[in-house]
Each structure stands twice: as C-alpha cells, then as structure tokens.
Image (tube, rainbow, N blue to C red; front, side, top):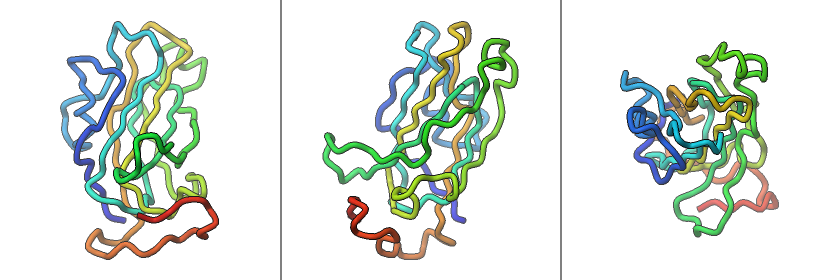
Length: 175
C-alpha cells in the first residue's frame, strides 16, 4: 500500500485559528490537530481535500480529537461543481454518547480498510475527499481530527491506474 499525499485544502467550514485545517496536510507533523472554531456552535465540521493524484483508496487512518461521528465522501476534481460526491465511508461512530458527555476517550485512532468502504466507491480512483465530522452530544469543547493518512490500494504510485473495477452499470464513470 502506497501513501497518498494530500496536496491542499479545497474548502472547509470551520477552524480554530490556533489549530487550522492545514494541520491535516502532513500527518507526521507535530503542529497539532484541526479543531472547530470555539465560536462555531453548528457541531459539524466539513473539509474537502485534494489528493496528489487520482488513486483507488485502500486504507484511511484517522486520529480522532473529540468527534462523535465521521463520514468520508469521495469525488474527482474534474467533476462539475453540482455533481454530488459518492459516500466511501458512511457515518461511523468514533465516540459514544457517554464518552462525549463525560469528555472521555476524545483521542483515538481508527483504521478503515477496503472492507469498510461502500461499493461502488470502493475500487474506483478518486482525487478528492470530503470529510464530515460531527459532535452532536456536547457543546462544551472544540472537536476535530488529529491526523489523516490515506493509502492507495496500489502497491506503488508509479503503477498506472487500471480501468474501473466495478461494472459500468454502477452509474459512475472513470475519468
């Protein structure tokens, strides 16, 4: 599995000036997490990230920092702006209601693999990620992600990307 570099942030909904979304760009840096703005009471964070190139996603490692739920959608930079993203990982619980209310177990690592991803998004090549983090259970603490690592299911990023691995009837088209 080859690591995939996140080249830049396309858009985001909120950030703490001390813990900006750019902290997600280098998972090995010690700059800190991406956290919600303390004044933002929406209890939901969104970020759209541009990957270095379109690849099939094999693994995603996420460092939690107070999020109760995480959903990951994928798309392509070549798509029109009105085309909806495809859900790769449906909303997944990272913290329980009890932990959220008590402020316990705010940091943890979750590793998602191909078997956790939904078809038809699994196996296709993507160059955009949209992460939606939410914490509906408490309004007292900022929340976000400590890190994000994306790995391609290709053995090496020097390999050419093959054609679609899902049937054409899936409604997705290879770019």
